[in-house]
Picture 1 (cartoon, rainbow, N blue to C red):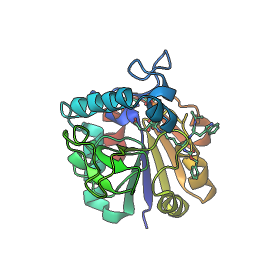
Picture 2: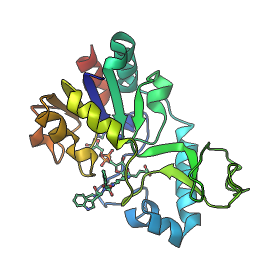
Picture 3: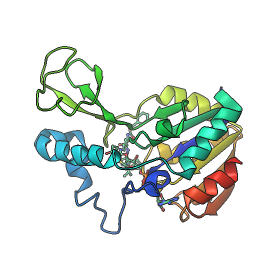
Picture 4: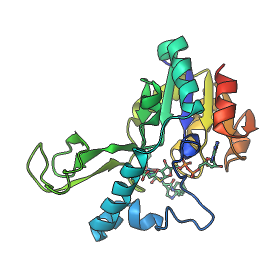
Length: 225
Ligand code: BJW
């Protein structure tokens, strides 16, 4: 069981050039949340949602992990399975930095899931040109991500890890989206020391024992050292 549980959000990938979610207008790259991050939005207009994720996949190819991702991977090299990274991010920057013990609670940009049979497939650019599921043949593939109103992945494993952790560290997340926003209270109730590393105080900053403000690329290596 991990002793150190790290929760990451969009802020850890910001210095790699991946945009965060909540900008001043409440829009995500010009889109309303309900249009691109709900199952209802997908049913209303698949084309718009597919294009939104196509653009993010293309952008992901242009970016690299930064010092914060690398520091977590190096920490895992030192402490092994004692570290679990739970990421809300759907990018693959933790893995590209070398982290292995990673839970993608909101899914992965580079995977597709069949709504008919539930099978998951590595994303191929041709998948939506030939939209039949390689598993069952039904044409009902969607991005393998968790939208509002859906249950995040691996919640049982996450709950168990939070209950066992001696340290819980939240990095680069606004604390606006549940259930991730409630992890600090869960871990704290079970005795973990809790630390927030974020550009600014998050909505749930007061739940942490300690909160440090600054860029993840500086704060995370300093903490992990
Ligand atoms: C830096 C930095 C730098 C910048 N260095 N820092 C009312 C009350 C409570 C809950 C609800 C409610 N009404 C509805 C709900 C539930 C809903 C919810 O939380 N809604 C809220 C809006 C209120 N949640 C759900 O529906 C979830 N499911 C659920 O609850 O199921 C029920 C259930 C749960 C558990 C067990 C059983 C049942 C599902 C949520 C799915 C979220 N999906 C998304 C999209 C994923 C796919 C995609 O990416 O396209 O996930 S939404 C989006 O938000 C994405 C993110 O992972 C997530 C969190 O965003 P994040 O990472 O925090 O990013 P930002 O942009 O908000 O913040 C970035 C932070 O970084 C900022 O603070 C910056 O300052 C900082 N920063 N640069 C350090 N360089």
